Image (cartoon, rainbow, N blue to C red; front, side):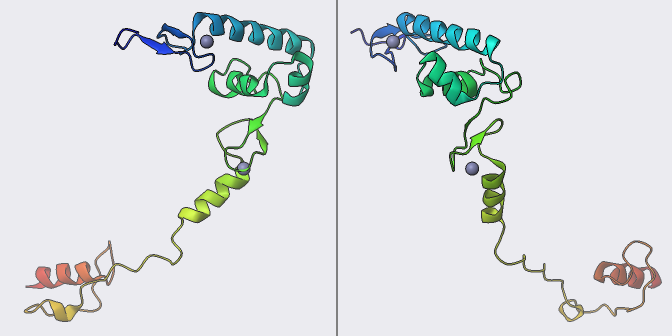
Length: 157
Ligand SMILES: [Zn+2]
Ligand SMILES: [Zn+2]
């Protein structure tokens, strides 16, 4: 085999082939296309079929069907309301995204900080010397806040 970047082993059958966008040898490409055709013609007649029914009726391996649905989007879950593929976390059948709603919520929970974030420490009046603060400033933006008090103080000087 020549050292080069244009040939590769087909991930499906191992044959050496010229690299292409689908990353399959011509032989496997043909087989995949044939299987897709079988699936499509079944779904034409049974558009409410579930993924399992489609698999059983066509004999197309489940991983190939998954590829059609999920990776290549050749069998759209939009057109066929009962086609699903498994959630990447729990395996429950889903029709969009990569994980189901339940796992999505759990993932969000996991990323949420356990405790509420520490309040950002405000500089205390004592930390700035030489400025006397008024406590009842009437700044229209942030009444009474540290920066308003400074602003008011500066205005009055
Ligand atoms: Zn192949
Ligand atoms: Zn899930």
